[in-house]
Image (tube, one colour):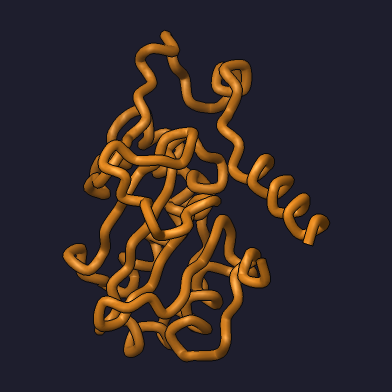
Length: 183
């Protein structure tokens, strides 16, 4: 048990670490003044990711993601009665990588916005209204899939294969396990 607790602590410590001020200065996002960079917190609309400074990383990663259309087509008939809650952080490198891929898939599927709830978290993985309370959100991004209001599964921090293949396994009932499912 002690080994498991140590492993969990190490995973939490290193999962989705925020960029240091130095790495922000060296990133492709040009920020004249650190105070100009504002992270999104709480419930938000997707179009906020298409505004500066978030558009700098979001649009590039969205455009560069190569969608697996064959798997995406298999998802289309399975996703109609699903609701998704996505927890992410605009400061988080994993969210910056996987959220644009997720949205590219949702766009391909023509997934309805009213079935998708977006929640941005702080560095401490909290939200202003404690929306994470009781949901065991330890690593982000976390995509929670629900049917009839009940969670069926989730992708935590990163896909095991690809975002498309993981979502297909979840919706197809193939016994998907995220990277932290055994803890």
